[in-house]
Picture 1: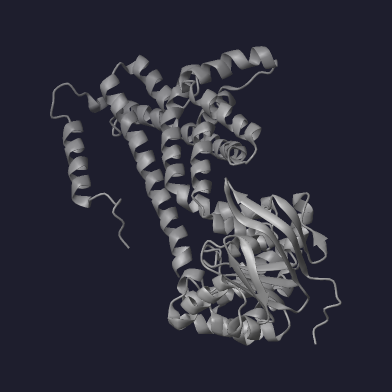
Picture 2 (picture 1 turned 135 degrees about the horizontal axis):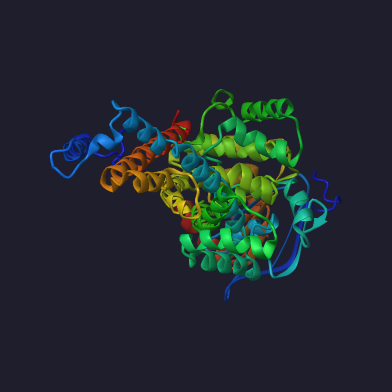
Length: 250
Length: 255
């Protein structure tokens, strides 16, 4: 049903990444097609976050090729900036700008990076605040919001750049349990709108609902890539079975 | 909201009343007639002393503004990932910090015109020397302030495609400046005090006026006491101003 004949939105080939002498990514390859929703899971320290941080080059990889939104991720900061405009990123710690109101958090990118006039940026921002279901919080500062609300603002901030790809780096890991669902709900709706998404998460229920492809990582390698039905019911590797047993039973 | 840094009011009042008692002439050494505002000559002397105020303030404010800008420009290469740029920052800070302000004032006023073939007024020589000297400290303050901002803020700015300038201007500096405001306030206080050194090249500011009056009236005790009080009043005012600004910036985020 998916147009797999389209060129991949993200193509990662043979990527290695070191932190000092520690190898965080070992010859990782992955392709994500337009409209595809990929969930990356694995034990902590397995390189999942590093992988998606390499996709928008918050981390620089040492070897291998990454292409995103049709552009190779190498070279100067200017081409990098153009690519980043097409890739939204949601962080575990939200990383909202604490000195700016919700509205200003949302309009900063469109106004400065996309040269949008203020009124247009504000209309856009209100539109996305509506989508993450907090239109009434536009005038508040991030610290006046709950964690779940802050993360939804962060999602809206990324969406205001109207990206082709959205990356989520453990978006619910810093949240109190009762706030996880409101964030997952927004993410699910985004997935239903056929946004290309790469999500690092431990929320397996969410993964089951929205993922087209599950990726399991361990020790810097991609151990298993499979559709969710296969992944959850018939994982092929022992490491993946062990991981799933641990994460699904508690 | 009462912060812990607020000085205790009773202690402050005791200090003031003790000072007043001391200055009220209970000891026979004092001769307050020299600045007695009820006599014509006393009033004239008092006005003469106060006439240096404008220059002291102007000198300090101009110098602090320049040194803040210079300090920021010097701090930025210090935060670079490129070694040579950090080297520039390091050399500047180390060199400038090592020269005494008084020496710098003399050098700028008497030395600089000879090599640069320009004539510098006393005021601008003072401003340049003070700003130069202070810029090294401002640079260190800015560097620490900017470094204290969480890496996630840079990453978020990068993720919405902001360039370096916009990231600094809209994301990092507004937060950093809030944090370094107390330190910047300290530097302004420091600057007001150091401006007294510019009197040696003939700048007509508070200290110079006092010196001149001492020569004609020969009452150093009273005149320098007035000078002390002038600086005290000025600096207490500035401190209060900085605290007010700090509170205002903080409430911006809370309401």
